Image (cartoon, rainbow, N blue to C red; front, side):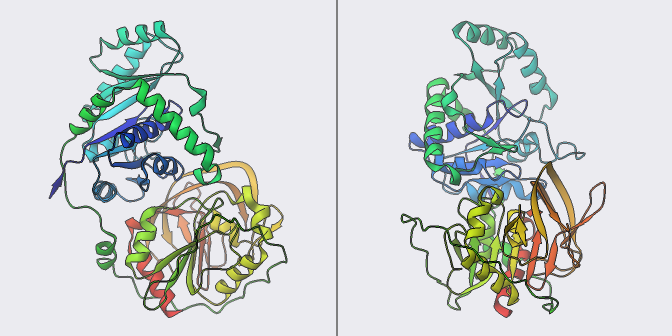
Length: 488
């Protein structure tokens, strides 16, 4: 089986060159032409896909050769691109920058080769003229298997500057497919190493995406870019399917729930105001009422779409809720998933919603499965920056000046609701917080880092860790979690 979905990879020599502006603008510009656009992001980034979703009206999806393995990049791409006319893949960092110490693995170049897709190189030309030719020549010639099909010049100062850049690039033979002037209106605020999530600034984000689309439409040759996308090579193989993945990955035997300990009592607090325009929460649809609640809203914006698809394929009715506003867990909740985000920004509001904090603590105390990653870990702690949280874990969390960032090789230290002891997975850490202690009496993971440390907490039905993982790499995680929801 093969597919020839037209596709482009938007890359750059380095971070900060304008990849997100160009990729998001292209997605929105193509969508405005009536094309069904499939949006993708290389690497573990959760934030850019939110802007991609605004631009296209489709779920933004990640393609990560480290977390999922190179063999899944094509199938996951085809899964996301089903029924689409064109796909745009935004790269990560510089074109050839991959996982530290792993060569090209997980780089934009690696993913472009796996997808047999042409690359559009976005170059920040603000501080150069003729030198741009040497820069582009170097990127084009570095790896002959990477096909750089054109250049988009960003932050061009004037007409004269544009002429100088075009004349220089004529010597490389690489066509200029677009020229963008400096445009402050497309700038979006950043936090840590990424943009502020769409959920935290939706109205402004919509305006920013519209500005990106207008800038790209005015400054780029969209017809030439569509033509380049159509030149992508055919991809062989089948699209990834959540139901098939779950069915082919039976879970190991379930662990016996631990009876050790009990959750500390939840400190008192108030509740956050209800937002009147929030849609009605969907009712449970599965015959046995097996509801898995998934945290969302502004504080918990980090998740991979495939996680929900896998949980659904495993038999769960996935119901979202907002810890900032909902005072109860969804009716019939049998399991809870709390992903990543920026809870430190909303610590006061999360703390004030005492009814929900108590509901989470009661669910954990009952032995029901709870899976928490990064922000979810902080929410389960006793406190965050001195403010009471759910108190499920006897640990305190606080903001620090130190950024912890990078891919990790991990092994499950013991049995949990997510994995059997010895299960190996790959993950990613990204946080400026610290939890003390960093691991419980039963840690979640052993990490192969220079320090070879243990990390996270396994306690009764709770699995809490800083590590972000991609369940498509180990679909048995979702099936194991749902089976435990049935039996707990």
